[in-house]
Length: 342
Image (cartoon, rainbow, N blue to C red; front, side, top):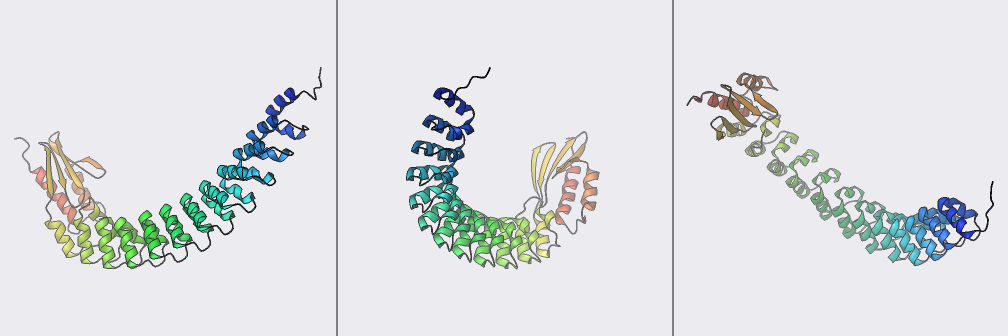
């Protein structure tokens, strides 16, 4: 049996809660019905005739962009909409600066929907999202600085940035030098002092820039074409583990002499274990089962014969060309001649 119920308000309200889309077919729905309708989906307000202010507010709180279905929204509704979604400002005609500020505070990129934003609005936009600067026509240096402080990468959206703006971007991320066209030596130095390896992105760096790069990170010499004797010497002086193995050039005489004459540091851990700090990798030597085992880098507990074979045959070999390998041989000779029976 089917029973027809058409005018029971309570029953209709319960039905509307379960099936909100039917409200558009209910003549004169109550405010409670309307509120349930928009709280689930803000866009549902388009199906309500003459919604109350309270219903409008609930709709934009659920989805700011639902304001596009509201005729002549009040200031309170506009504020609620942009606070939920800054992009909702696209649907607000002639928004006040207060509305604009709230929109960009929620989403800096919403400035793209604002005509002739004030400097204050621009600053708030880039503070929220540095990338918002791409939507600002002819931003002031103050706005540019605020943007790159938030995200150095946005410098690519700035036409002819000043040196001050470039420095601010480099301080945020030294790799930003890749995005700077013909950086000055001052900018280059600022970049390599923070990360020597960014010299890879500098065309024809001066010797001063090269020196600062290898001082910060001796591995930067890999990215320097034909480094001078002074630059090579500065790099090997850092004695960073395995840096010498990463140098793909034949070292000059001064750098080679430095490596050869610089003493190997030895640390006695126990009677059966020594650690040697060389100009290459640290070598751990451990005596067990009546023989010495060697560990360095990713090689663990290799025997003397295996170690010597790798010294001569791994890569280009030749201890005369790579002094750190000669030091490995010295380490082997030293420990193998220790009297372990004492």
